Length: 368
Ligand SMILES: *Cc1c(COP(=O)(O)O)cnc(C)c1O
Image 1 (cartoon, helix red, strand yellow):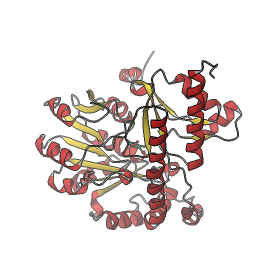
Image 2: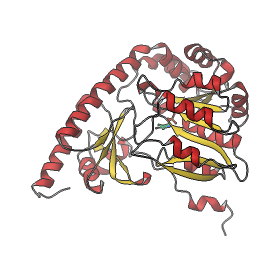
Image 3: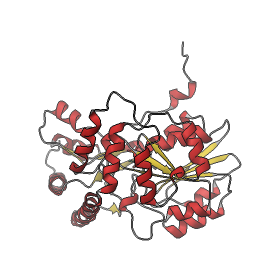
């Protein structure tokens, strides 16, 4: 007899990129390069001391309000402390928003395909989900606006988007925000904010013009702290208050708080990551062009590549040789894959294997 909620039967759980440990275990490989989850390829060594210091306090709960981190981040962003909500990754901010806003009969608007968590969590929360197709791998705000109805409660916008890497610029976003009903919450997911180009939306200015807005960012990508899980929302004090009501009191652990505080102090590491990403993206672009592989220009630390066939062949070829990329079948793109900018040597290893695979295919030699 099923006693859990019926809706859960039709919800697929999120399948993360294959972890390095798993590939080592399963394939017995020593060297594994993961270019699958948009993580930062470098270890932010400067956090070690601060995190070690926290080990001594492991028997005590962390501060619920992230006092020092909040103080530092509010100065860094020039927003009031009451405007910030911290989450166990920005994924949690998505969940908290749905928990605080969705009532029976409400709908959310999502692009299709886009970051999968919006739809999964929305359906768990009981919301109806309306999908709006991408146009040429980009968000169509015009089409999103057409799908708004009286039941629309939240619109999710990944900007820049994952897995396409495209973005909507300041002008487009501003006119969209000011043209839709004030009673709709717009959720702007800026997980790749640090990599974004100059005409990227100044979303904190937009927050002053239009209240019902949540901007979320994360320490997982450019800051290199994916392993300790820390994201945050910037919103109005009123929305921050309700998000805090539905938040668990100790959602951000001590190590995450300590590491992020150090990350805000150490701008050198961040600059290095951004510069490296730009340079290596250009390397990817030029190599893809040489290989006649179409790709989508990206405002993030990953690139979507359009493959001419199902990606299972290339995925497995790379996997067996220790390079993990991301297939996009789960997003409905069975002929595309996503590759994260890794360390220079790893990117070169990936390109070398890609070239080998393509030339084997051309000469009809066996794959695998
Ligand atoms: C990676 C990612 C996130 C989640 O990051 P957290 O690690 O949970 O902070 C959120 N949104 C998008 C679009 C992402 O790609």
